[in-house]
Amino acid sequence: YISIDFPEFLLLQEFYLQLHNIDTSKIKFVSTLSDLKEKIGDKRGLLIATWSISEVSEGLRKKFFEIINPTDYLIGYQRAVGGVDNNAYFRNFANEHPDIAWKDFSISGLTGAGNRYLLGSLKD
Image (cartoon, rainbow, N blue to C red; front, side, top):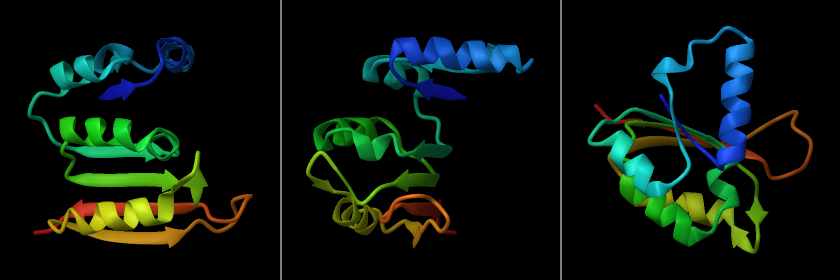
């Protein structure tokens, strides 16, 4: 597993996991895209990004997605952040990845309008 975040939040994550007796030796905690690139190598797998990727600039998103190449996606996002129309962004993102079967749907029961999930899995 790889967790990418600000260094301070990575410390909190590691502390919380250890507090609940979760073995963190199999988790790589990284805080830079260069560290992510080094740790991920050519491995592929599941990307879980609940709100995180939709809250950063489009430039950072582009750099992030150039490094990783998941086979499966679970992305939670809100309608817009910082002037970015996330509905349009993720619709375009899905269209740019036709090898993935996508499902985008509203999250019911979550406070605030416009929260959505984008799920994707590599086509057979």
